[in-house]
Length: 507
Image: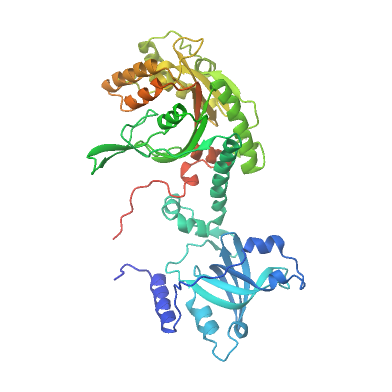
């Protein structure tokens, strides 16, 4: 038995029982023949009696407002495309002597939030409002909880809006109903993925799927989630990246493969991080990171245009241009430019001292690479507002990347920064199996020092490289962050339908 119901919830449940007593099923299973959306009518309706198309429309959606005027009423119906005013006349929806459908059901037992279906014809009211003149009305689903709709006072001020972020993220299903403006963010997210997919497919690259449960957490430096498979009696990890599997496919003979992957990292939650996130990774044979920088410029310029209709987007107080070309700086150049620090030739102790000056937390587990990364993050990242490639990272930071062809101690890697955040990471991929084995061994040494993010040794991947992988360039793009930037959102939770949160406590 339900307890702790408020007055409105009790009244709605009473209405539910009264509907059933009248022989009305509040949750009918029959198909409802919807033939158009509210947006279709708004976009294409011409106020002409000659247009047969609009003489019999069938809509379904939520009852959002209701204005009773005796034996007639106006109401707003909201479907997936927006709202449409409907006009309901008692004598037209109840042509016989029994007027219960209007007097009892529509006026008293239907509630705001109920899902109804209507049939009728389109017309324009005397005030110029496009409407549907209802000739048939049916209840499709009873709403038992009141919608937290905003209210408006006599001066036109809005109050009691459903704006609390925690409530919105927990009950996204309510958020999308009462704050339909946020649907546009998720529509644009779909457009981001579609634009990227079109770019890859037009070039003949193949979309693939790789394992989410993995015996080795490889392809990135991150803490994994761990589980156990009972039948095999082995530990398994939720993937932190799909890189190593995609490169196995390049070994197998595909010239270009890509995947939109759900990845999982057992790390903190903040405005730009969620434990479960979406990443695009693409690998193309016979290319290098110079080619990939040019490709990323073309890809993102097109994506911005496809999603927003412009190369320039607003992000907070900044106007970001995704039109190519993008600025390019080495990591050392960026640190020197923005932090006035020359990292060339500095020892681990000297780098640690520089990091401490910048307020970074320095521990004994950090090596040279992590210290340089901390210094870069503290002094340079916040200045990288327009799209900027940061290139040529220390070898210790990139165990899967080919050594730089002309700069000892560095690798051929870039990260793309926009508005102070990294959104893409790419390499000229390491395809020398002997070098790869040594890099994995170096990672084991870092793990022995206590580095929980050190990469595991993947023997099978090394074996795959021993069968020869062609020269290859790979790219990873954070879809969530890219969507944030193309929809002017400051929090990753705003671009995820269901962000991770602490569990609710129910009585």
